[in-house]
Amino acid sequence: MENQALYKYILGIADNSLILGQRLGELCGHGPSLETDIALTNISLDLIGQTRSYYQYAAKFLGENKTEDDVAFLRLENEYLNVLLVEQPNTHFGYVMARQYLFDVFHLMLMEELQHSKDITLAAIARKGIKEVSYHKRFSGDWIKRLGDGTEESHAKMQEAINDLWRFTEELFQMTEDDRLVTGEGVGIDISKFKEAYYDEVTALLREATLTIPESKFFISGGKEGRHSEHMGYLLADLQYMQRTYPNMSW
Amino acid sequence: MTLVHEPNIDQSLIPILEKVSDPEIPVLTVLDLGVIREAKLSDGLVEIKLTPTYSGCPAMDVIGDDLRKAFADEGMVAKIELVLAPAWSTDWISESGRNKMEAYGIAPPLSASADKEALLGKKKIVKCTLCGSTNTHVVSQFGSTACKALFKCDDCLEPFDYFKCLK
Image (cartoon, rainbow over all chains, first blue to last red):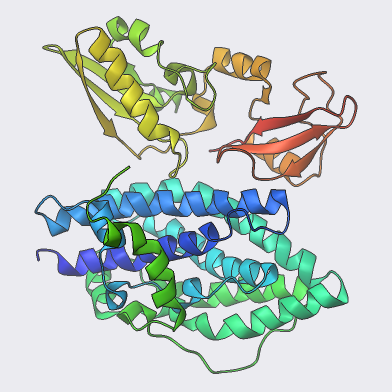
């Protein structure tokens, strides 16, 4: 394939949005209140909308009349390049918000840089996404504070969620071979450069939420190379069901 | 700055474009909403550049279909291209669009800074679409569609949508 590195670079960004969007979509009709239910699915819709723009672009590299649906639904598990964080299950609402916030802070920083990419399509998607992602972060950040600095039970659950998800945060800043190649061309973003700003921002909010910053130095990664956690297969079974069962179906 | 964002639309196409409305807010035409960035006619082919309000807005597919149909009814073929840049802003909603929106029961967007204060519940500034009171509060930062938040009036108790500012 021509532009293999760029194709995979796009997937590395878009798959995060697809998989997190899918996770949030699973909660449709199951949110703890009507307002949060609507919020989760609205965020899901934004993320999947962004994914469509990326995949429409990525599909052009596949040629042979391939479309966004081929990219979204017909890859094998090890061909999805999302980080492990976004595929973690919807354990409870606090957990969902912690996962969201840890991703939103990174996502917004990435979009803010990507809007200056030499690639005009990626820059346009990012510029549009910034407006949406900043709204997501506002929502998830509010909930971290509300639950962290809430009741004894909400505090304990939020702390547990942060402790559990912390080990996935470092992967956000890892760069693959393809990432480096595309970044060298002025198209990709050197994500390692805002790692410090990320942890500064996250820890400041966690402190405000009266939460303790995890001290563990154990981090886990692999998603960006296609090595996923045990949860991914189940998620994809759900996501891909219709296209696998009725090939080429469309709405 | 507004000059750069001024849409490029052939005057002859305006009457047809005015017939196409937003499926979610039927009182607004696509022109009121500011989503048509370019519409040009050449040799019976109409080339339209459409920009989405939000990335995932499901109304865009419907608007594309409705545009094609509206032009087909006039014996013209419309080719729709979805453009993302420059990103849509609520500033592009026309003055008449804002008035129609309010009459329909959706409070029109405030300025960016006022919007933030309203959505964070810091200031009571969103006007109730029923009684006009600003004694209102945010019920949910997210609403029935991606572009709206849910408010409630504390005077007349009416729940209503507020169209969020997007810049």
